Each structure stands twice: as C-alpha cells, then as structure tokens.
Length: 251
View (tube, rainbow, N blue to C red):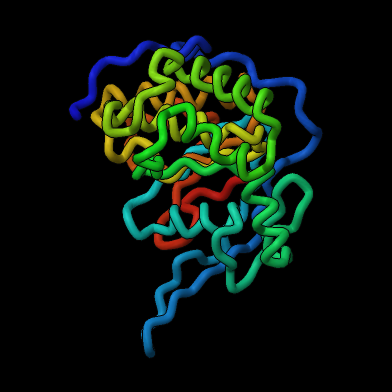
C-alpha cells in the first residue's frame, strides 16, 4: 500500500527540544578500538578498523557512510548481535564484548531496542499486538502491558490504528509501529539501521523527527545509521564511517 499522510506524533518534532535531564551521569555507550574482519577463503574484508567513540544519555547520533562502509557491522557490535575481533563495547555499564550468550540475550531484551529498515513486524498480529510482543517475552503483567502499548501507540501517532495489521498500514505507519515496539521494554539504547531506507523522503524525515523527539521524551541514547544527508541535520552528532574507519576523530 502506498504511503499516505499520517498524523503527527503528540510529541513536538519541528524543533530540537532540550535534552532529557533525568539521565545517568557519564556516557551510556563506550566503544574502544573496535575491529572486525570478515574472511572468505584467503580473502579478508576489514569491516571495522579501530573505531572508537562515546554516546551520551539523551543523544541522537547519526552514523553516515556509503554501503559497505561498516555502519551495520558497527551497530551489530554495539547491540550485541555480533562479536568483534578486537576492542570492546560498554553499554549501560555492561561490557558487551565480554558477556556470555545469556547475558547478551538479557541485554537485547532489557537494555537495547532495535529498529530495522525492513520493519520486521509479525504479519498476523495487529499493531498493538506487535508492540506488546517484547513485553510478553519479558512477562510483563497484562494490565501493565496493555497500558504501555496504548501510551506507545499514542506517542507515535497511531492510537487509531491499534487493531490494524501491517498489510493495512503504510510503510511509514509500519515503521512507527516498529519504533513503538523497540521502546516497549524501556530500553536505554535505541539502535536504528537505515530506518528510513524504504520510505519516501517526506515520510523518512517524519520518522527521523519522531526518533529525535522520542530520544528526548524517553531519555534514551540513539544510534541511527543513514545515508540520507537530508536527515543528518536532525542528529546531535554525526559519525562518518569510511572503509571501516571514522573519517573525523570524535570524543
């Protein structure tokens, strides 16, 4: 179904509000000298080559670079979906690169929320049911779960679409549902990999503005990979990856 105009979220998105103040001191994300090499037979591809940076609470960081520059690889290391060959990642005081598998599962369930380009919604479930899935896995009581779903759908401007299934929603609406689902368990870090890649430019900007507003209102840190220069201006800071390295050193 083609994208149609959707209601703007209730949170303000047309200008940058002040960062959330009720957050912990110190960086939420610490990445130090990260290195990842993929091997296919005798051939080696260096995906990450000594990447280091820090992400503060309530900060929206855009990760920019061409396809193959290492953006997705970097996000996968930070979110605990893959392990680096060298270096370390610390998220919310936990050294991700040293966690066992059960620790990584807990991290991805309780600390990190993921938003992907392909939305990743379950087709047979309604928007509300999709948002509630992470809370079911975390065994959140039904009454609390239903209220959280209601609040999240209202935050992303979809309270009137709670009972619709993904195929009944536009691409932009589906991505809003995916964002609400990523926030379900109140993560401290939001990772979005090309979240506007399948959307037209206007809808893509609305999604990026929504992410920016939610970073402030929810007090999370967000890492957003994008190749769209028009969206970079909405971030607090930009990391430019080129052939697995940061093009401009950052603190």
